[in-house]
Amino acid sequence: MPEFDSRDPNTSAFWDERFERGFTPWDRGGVPEALRGFVARVDRPLSTLIPGCGAAYELAYLSDAGWPVTAIDFSPAAVAAARAVAGQWADRIEQADFFTWQPRRSLDFIYERAFLCALPPAMRPAVVERWAALLPPGAFLGGFFYIADTERGPPFGIGAAQLEAMLSPYFERLEDMAVTDSIPVFDGFERWQLWQRRS
Ligand SMILES: C[S@@+](CC[C@H](N)C(=O)[O-])C[C@H]1O[C@@H](n2cnc3c(N)ncnc32)[C@H](O)[C@@H]1O
Image 1 (tube, protein in one colour):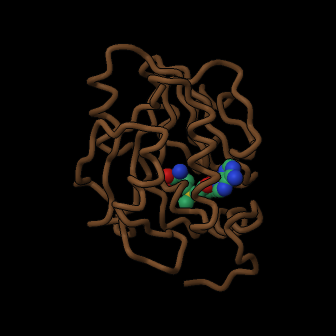
Image 2: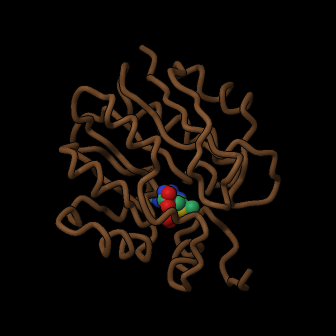
């Protein structure tokens, strides 16, 4: 584990330093199977937000499938990494803070991967409230949740019951599946979950 100057994952400097030094153990290098399965069973393109997108491999995949997608990250180095892999879809990436970014069109889907677990547990209520504020009734929150009992992070694990208690006031859970193609840092602790915004 290299030594870093920035220790606060709430700051873009923390993530900039890690991207710039090539220390990105969360980076999957591609699109997870469970997301591919979700895209295959959805009957229409979903207007999608990818918060804290990192290298954002999912952006090109969803865009190629015809989905209107915006990927945001507050770290300039993350945005540069995303633009380097996005090809023709690079203009769909914005440098922005998830907590203040405003959508230009109504969202159908927020895709979660390694964003909730990137932030200290004290930020969780704000993340959940923001998800709920951005999604209209019937829209989906889906992706990968790091279900683990880990006090130190990132990644910060969350208990299954705690996650359910935080999301249930706003969302109904539709799917909950083990993940079989996790990368080592999440292996055995990652679940695909799909939630629908309540009315
Ligand atoms: C662990 S990385 C995960 C990146 C990507 N989702 C993935 O699966 O590879 C967390 C990312 O969230 C970004 N991030 C953290 N807080 C943020 C915020 N408030 N607004 C936007 N991005 C944020 C970081 O810059 C970093 O790129």
